[in-house]
Amino acid sequence: MFLRLLAAGCAAQIGVSGLTSARAATCESLASLALPDTTITAAETVPAGPFKFGDVKPTFPPNRPAPELPAFCRVVGVVKPAITFEVWMPLEGWNGKFEGVGNHGFAGDIPYMDMGPQLVRGYAAAGTDTGHRAGGPPSWMKDRQQLVDYGYRGVHEMTEKAKAVVAAFYGRGPRYSYFNGCSTGGKQGMTEAQRYPTDYNGILVGDPNLSQTHNRAQYVWTAQATFAKPETAIPADKLPLIHKAAVESCDAADGLRDGLIADPRRCRFDPAVLACKPGQDAKTCLTGDQVAALRKVYAGPRNPRTGAPNYPGHAVGSELTWKGFVSGPSLTPTATQFYANMIFDDPKWDFRTLDFDKDIAAADAKVAAIVNADDPDLGAFRKAGGKIVHYHGLTDNNHTPLASIAYYQSVVATMGGRNGGVQSFYRLFLAPGENGCSGGGDGPNVFDPRPALEDWVEKGTAPESIVATKYEDDNPTKAVLRTRPLCPFPKEARWTGSGSVDDAANFACAEPRKH
Image (cartoon, rainbow, N blue to C red; front, side, top):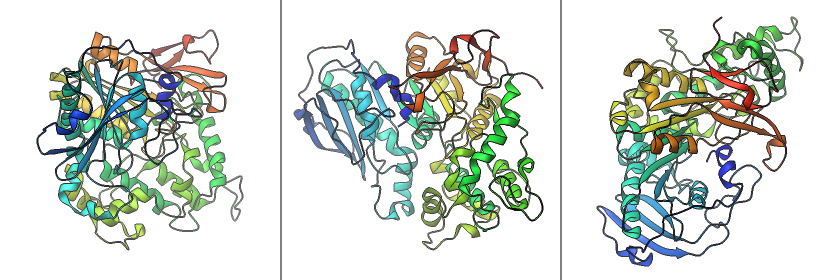
């Protein structure tokens, strides 16, 4: 989960001035804890030592080995019908807080790799598989209860049951509760704010796919526009060419040429500047068919009957991350599984057949109310005193940042403006040149919004900026190449006019320039 985010927290074993007190229960005694509709299947003390959970390589932040975990109490439970959850609670040094962590993709497993860093930080941490198993048969996508559990119920049940487990173990509940998720986990965080506004005091929403039905449609749109036909496919070796031209066209729109696009919406890049001569097709240019395909990729899906936009396109400047999206050879699995199993129940479904009028409407009618988290009314969450820090990398390819901007603007329109209104509890931070949940990218791509969120929740100090860092080779053990403040949208980082443009100290957050 957001590897870029964890570097600051896991670069060293974090000492927590935790709260120590006599526990109300032993770890093993929690096996008999009675919770509604829940069976506790395991309660064990895990000694301090190397990370050993899950089937993934334990490397939390980029190029860092997983930290050794402190001794902790591990509780496993199942909420009817099949929502498995785990709670990890440090035996010593608990900071008095709880953190729920989000999933990725279609969930289906416990996010161990995201729970470990939170345990090291001193949190009691919890995760869930949301009621199904990854890698198994897709039958869960056809079962309404399992869809509901995946769409919104699983994380809520995990949250309620985990808090009860924490209270039983420590003799009191957490002082503050936080949720932390990126991609699907980001969507889950916003779902919590929309549906269960009292579950969490603070929520980190990272690079979310808030409208899963339309995000999957964008994948298909891009595939239909490009590799569905040989003549429109964009070879991967042309992506650096396109990216270079895009950055050269748009870099200076924020008043500073630094190799980064601060706001892709202001970019007027036309791939026709790379057009080949008639009859030519070389690595140094684009054919007419490829130019037309790229224009569709940037524009995003539209209803062919009405012309109305369905979802934003890929952001200008994100081209280096497009390889599988525009050159194929096959549609991204999350989109294939979504339509073949969740929507059409047809294992032979072909992406070339998707109708962007009736099929998109059918998908919305069938599952949007279950799997999407795009309701702009966050009034109940604001009334409960909750805070949201939402961030998105501007070169993310899986979930276009333009959709996060559009959602934020819809909240502002619904709730009466940003100044003194929405920004009193919800702020969006955009990261130029940052590739998304897995990190990487040309810009500063390691940042940790957690302290900003905690200061906002616990001290009432709203975040005015979050500093991001670019390391040599994207390796936090190497030299710092650049730092830059990330600003609450619509503000952006503005160079003060003196000092190094690679030092965040020489920037201030300001309203965007007018053009």
